[in-house]
Length: 499
Image (cartoon, rainbow, N blue to C red; front, side, top):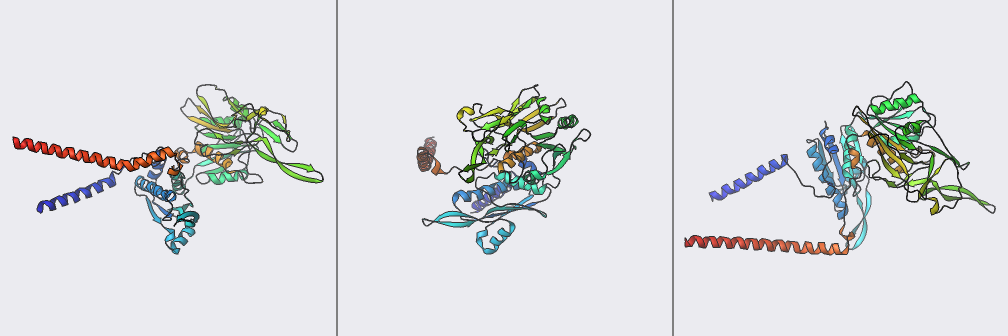
């Protein structure tokens, strides 16, 4: 009896010791294809830099369909890792708003609105109110993720939200002014998106005024006047000091009222050409394009019809790059093509956005035949490059990047809202140029779901029989192993008796 008590005490002691050790030296193995549950260095650095605790309130409903309920499990797994990397500066709690009216009211007042989902109950489909939102709080600052879309890039959403409320002094982004460029008001959607993590301000650059040292990235959007040689020299100095540029440039201008397009010069195209990047004075035309309204007359009636206009290409072919990941379609108007000719081994160019397979380029000037019937014979030069990154290495060891888009109007708000991906394209580009943490790489790091009903029949059959037979095979192997072990024991005992 005494021996049994000692054994129990030892086992309990070992369990307690193992539990304490596991708290300090916890680890797990991530076997997912894209290391979806392994935190990036960017996230780890953000969590280590926290000086004050962040409270995370996760408003997630219970008893949801499996593919939606998995979102909660995945999010909780992330929070566990975040808490460990933050040195206990992240505290989280899960709240079920469906539990009672008070908690539902709390969620709605916090900014988390429910969504209606379809669920099956007793062979009938019905709609259920579901909450999948998060509120992060740090002192008097608050950030809301109103809806955690299943499969969304959770690490990016969570890390960027933490960074928004943890960073008090935002990095500054400059918008160059003084040469007819787009104003802050014309880029209001871009500014709103960038203001989350950056402070965007108008910057004057000329022969005697340099770019402030605290500006990491300077945006030059749709200049219309000639930029002086002195101002261009200031841009060169800015680049040599490690700065980055975003340039959205019109090389051609189209006038639909006169159905005529011509080339324009501002001096910046010659400055880029000296670095090996030519912004051609041509029009990229694409069968994949937007439409324009054309007034037509039939009898005594006038009406407007939409006509496909290849001079307004819809770009949906992008390189695999952090600035373009996740983009679906960017609408450009009167875009030009880019061509890079290396000047030296220290300058490189990475094409990022292309026209479709049915596209071409047409030299300026051009008369627009709006009623023209376009055919495949008109699109003989596919995959025209319309955007890319020029990188330069200097003798000092510093490196600069120039993100060039051969259309200056794509991010500008005029009489109507700018298409979402047009805004995202510029925001992503500036974020990539300005953010040294690598957080932008997480934008497309979502949770990949592979429901079994989407698999091929052969694969489903294999998995079904594997799940059915594997336990039986393992039990059989274990039985054979135990039988052999017992047999060996009996053999040793017989040998010992004979001896």
